[in-house]
Image (tube, rainbow, N blue to C red; front, side, top):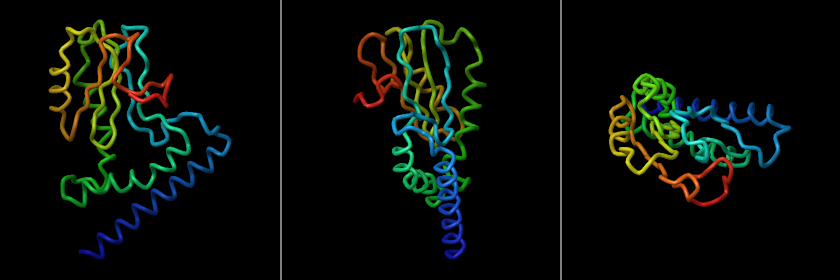
Length: 178
């Protein structure tokens, strides 16, 4: 069994390395500061009523950040499986299904009137970021997201004033601390 696990881990690491090499080859012309969703993590708009709300950075990163993060993604992704907390060999493999479940759960077009919210799903973690009035029930949103199968953790980072500081990194100012 230990040999099988070691072989499987080598396969996963090799596959991740091959994917990284392919990404690097296909992105040779990418500028050092260009932001991309290199790993195709689910990132989508749940609502967009507050025009001035800064768009979250979400899974966007520079090429250097992607290269730096590659090893850690493999390590963090397989830890779940090695700890017998996941049935899939990598926790990132759950993300598309979680994103689809969020889309299904929040189909009511008026559920988020008066808000601008974006969702990022990475490694079974769900990030809800954006702007909403102070009266918006952040706790209810968190509970609804936590109830989705396979979600491990939910982070709700919603500001009440789109012109003030927001509790998340933004696409417009990715280097600015939160």
